[in-house]
Image 1 (spheres, rainbow, N blue to C red):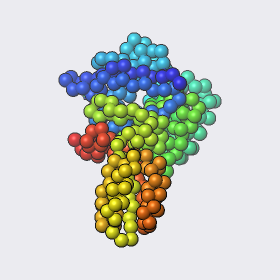
Image 2: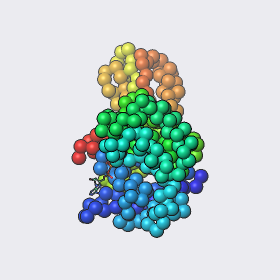
Image 3: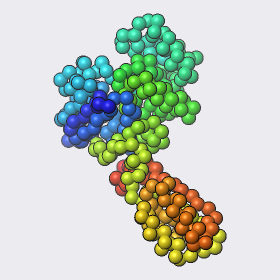
Image 4: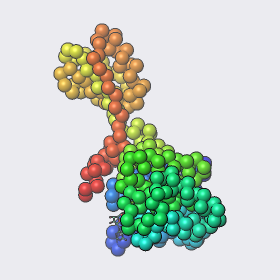
Length: 318
Ligand SMILES: Nc1ncnc2c1ncn2[C@@H]1O[C@H](COP(=O)(O)OP(=O)(O)O)[C@@H](O)[C@H]1O
Ligand SMILES: [Mg+2]
């Protein structure tokens, strides 16, 4: 697959402050790319440059063949953005917002009505379609903002924190609809500070922190990139025989073994799924029976901490 978006040294400064710092990142056609980072990481600023709302201070981004600093109008036509802060007029209703948006995007009236009805029903906001925006909850306004892009179905669809304030049922619905949009051929960028959202939706995740891109890869590979990130906990009926620890350390993917409690060892390793048979075999050979064995893999938060020394929550508070 060829890249459909290409950021080249993309930079945005506000006065002396660098919000986005020399981003080099390509987005493949037809993928969902998660842009993950704490508040203030520079996600929204990046998105606003892709959408030609903000002009890069340095560097540029190519949307398809178009350089946003030279052919903003052509680039803009390929992109639809569900903004983080929906800019609905208070007097607008969901129906009028969507109808206006679809009209501007050039959808003929029959198609417009059909798509708007479908999206409003799917998102569970059909009944409030004629209510004015000021009477709607934050979660409902967010749904309307997301609905704009689901009606538009652009070649490149960008969602900036699409499920903030949306309840869990709505979240799953929106995730399903974003996947469907991708399956129909759109390329998706999803900015989020929610680890789980990035994890379940994205083919690749680009982690941002303080304006910089730290790493970009498939979630699975990001987790595997932490040395000793997987943990296997084995507990025994009695104490832990000393030679177990010694023998476990000899397994090639094991990074560290520690006696967590009297009856338990914690094994830090890579690709636990491959080492499990060897651990079981070892115990069998030593004539030991484990009471329980528990495997946990690193979360994206562990990945973030690995690259920044902070959890996302800590980074969020700074
Ligand atoms: N118009 C602006 N003027 C000055 N600073 C800004 C402006 N927009 C964003 N920033 C700053 O840039 C940084 C990145 O913001 P943003 O792109 O909104 O991050 P994110 O979306 O990851 O939370 C923040 O520190 C924010 O305060
Ligand atoms: Mg943001």
